[in-house]
Length: 227
Ligand SMILES: Nc1nc2c(ncn2[C@@H]2O[C@H](COP(=O)(O)OP(=O)(O)O)[C@@H](O)[C@H]2O)c(=O)[nH]1
Ligand SMILES: [Mg+2]
Image (cartoon, rainbow, N blue to C red):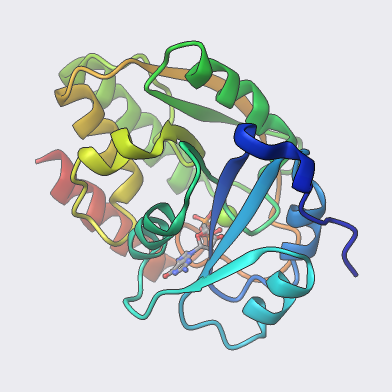
């Protein structure tokens, strides 16, 4: 099932990839197999009922449990547990390619404080219209009100761990990525954005933008951050 193993020779240049997961056992093997050399996956499971944690471990990833539900809660637990200076955050649903992380890591090593991916949909990406429209409007607000040169809400991000923790992000649900950007802007951090490919999730079902309930929750979370 898995052909990815930690590369012990990677040493100091290692990077942690935090992967928040709820019921992603179908997609995870593919995500973990695509991890670049020297990138160590740290899967944060909260409340999966499909063996996500076992699959993650079988594929060589470290697993952390987080009892408090929510995307932000899982990501924060992963960042706390990470031990490398640079931390990436990527979804576990197969919609994003870990092979595109090194370009964002390169930006951080070159001096950016936070590097984020702008999702560019591959054909038939299945990105719901309401989610795309919402992202576009929020990104416009981020540009106008916070002076950030971004066009997405930072679903993929790479940061120096200490700097990310120092931002003091408090949202523990879907508002987390947006709050990272807002706080980074307020702290005067250098934020850079690059295109990343966005594909349909490879298995399982959406917990956020794919359902009406998830979208309503996300809009509420976003609104709290921006007002
Ligand atoms: N640990 C954890 N992961 C979550 C939670 N909600 C979403 N995720 C993960 O966050 C990522 C993005 O969620 P997803 O369902 O793909 O949202 P969508 O892309 O808007 O459809 C996936 O890896 C999910 O498994 C949660 O409450 N806890
Ligand atoms: Mg997704």
